[in-house]
Length: 445
Image 1 (cartoon, rainbow, N blue to C red):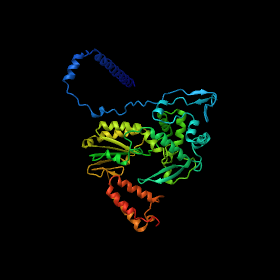
Image 2 (image 1 turned 90 degrees about the vertical axis):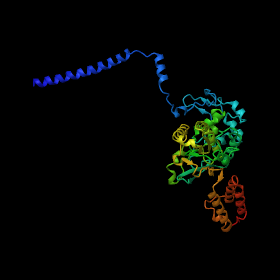
Image 3 (image 1 turned 135 degrees about the vertical axis):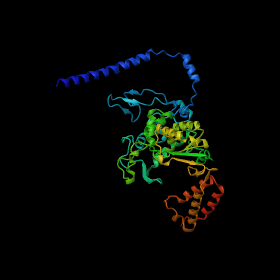
Image 4 (image 1 turned 180 degrees about the horizontal axis):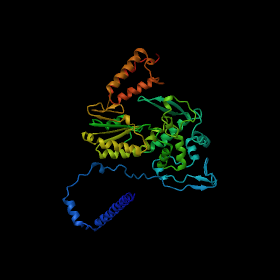
């Protein structure tokens, strides 16, 4: 028994010895490092000169998230007053006083862009030609920001199937709200400058100008923004009107007039239940006259950052609604591995979603299409699309237009005339032949 205790004691002593040596070694090592002589600056400079020059990695030259100075409207502390400053003023539940949000606008910017000066809801109601109570009803000011059902909503909702699969919600405003939104569009939003890269729903630009930028590319890179309109939230629309120059009170009222949310009680198909959550919060409605202009303004800094990134890669960039297009020469092919992740990060940082399934890289030997226009040699309509349209027109002549309206267009004649006008933008002789067939259609059949 005694020899067993001696062995255990010897083991403990050896363990303590090892531990003390390890601690002493670390201290002695740090002491040795401290005792080393410090190299002089001349010696280090000589070593730097004799060392071979290292080639800088290319991605270090790109600044992914530059600090843009967005020049917002001046910040002013809200005034707390005892009397209501305007109709439907917000009252604090804690103090019982009212909050005045009408003193932080940018009057100089409104005058520069010749925009109506609006501060209070009374000003907005007078400008729109309605009463203040009617304005509050149209903006759901008294219904906690949303309609209780489809009948109380100011929009017609309709779920439609996408060609790529899934469904989307079309929200068309009713007559009175549509007239108000058109006034906001023509007298306010149309006067605000948009990004040079935006070609969709901008006066003087079209599908043709968008396709002309990417003519005869060696590499064509296309991205798609998923759920473009629902991703623009109510807060973002308020920020747009604030950036234009309006005070917070006016921006809140204007944002309510141009956004909507899904009614609390609404019937929907089974395919829509998985995406209905996107429409529950206030968002830009797809179908409102003001939505394209507000969507372009919400993507302003996305366009600025992607345009700068494209210049770094010697590429060209443009956007048509939710379609992002990049193009360049053969040297762009070797840069795609670096460029694509940077584009995806910028899209994510700007609060948009990238539809990965629709991303495409098209090279010269493939059919390169930009928003329905072939750009391999020059902007032109696909021959397949022209032949299909010619077949529809011919069948309308022989069998009547009702037999060809398979998508149930309410104005099928205007639909076909618009498709012929689209062909005329790129190939006038073909459009003349199509118009000759169109003129022979008997629309009474």
